[in-house]
Amino acid sequence: MTIPGVNKPEVNLPEVNPAPVQPDAVRGRGQLLLVALAFAAPLLIALLLRGFGWEPVATRNSGTLVEPPFAIEDIALTLSDGAAYQWQPMEARFHLLVRQPESCDAGCAELADLLHRIWVAQGRRAERLDLFWLGAPPPEATRFRHWIGLRSSPLLDERLAERGVADARILVVDPNGFVMMRYGADFDPSGLRKDIARLIK
Image (cartoon, rainbow, N blue to C red; front, side):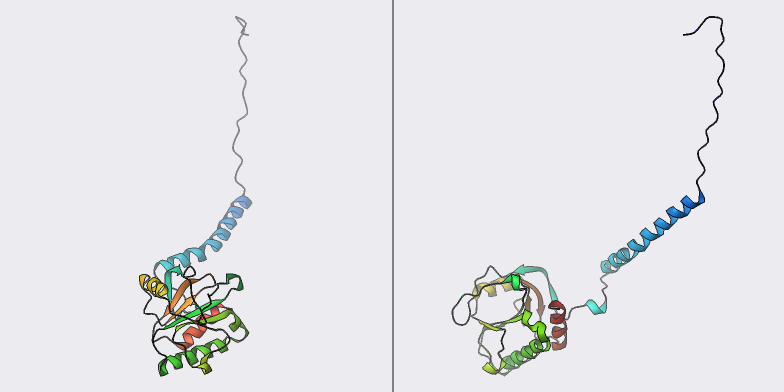
């Protein structure tokens, strides 16, 4: 309440100045920024290099990646003896798929022998690699424990043609039944062996 004739005393409040920023706080923020940059820089560099199409030589595949991979596990495949092939993804097996629609000549037998040697070269890890051979079988001598003879499949041929890989000599199929890599007729056996080793390691 204001009383007439009485002057209100003037109150002088002390001036409040913001606290000065301590040098230690500045250094702390700078160090945090440097740590963040140290973690982010490799990712940014990798994204930039990938954007220009570069990748380390050590990570390049000999085969050509199928992009996007596509499934064939929905196609009923029939074993040579007439039984249905059963996919078993829990066993984490990869598969090499070879189609040999005509009779197996000398070149076919050489391919079967080569794939046998590539399989053996994987050592104990070879247990995770099967060979699907569709059509005319190779000689008995070139077949091995994980050689799986399959009958030709028009539905499979149609699927491969739709995806543009019908001309591939060898296809790599992952444990879930997705075609993920292809090799032409002039593929490098050493490159195939190394690709397989990376997949089943």
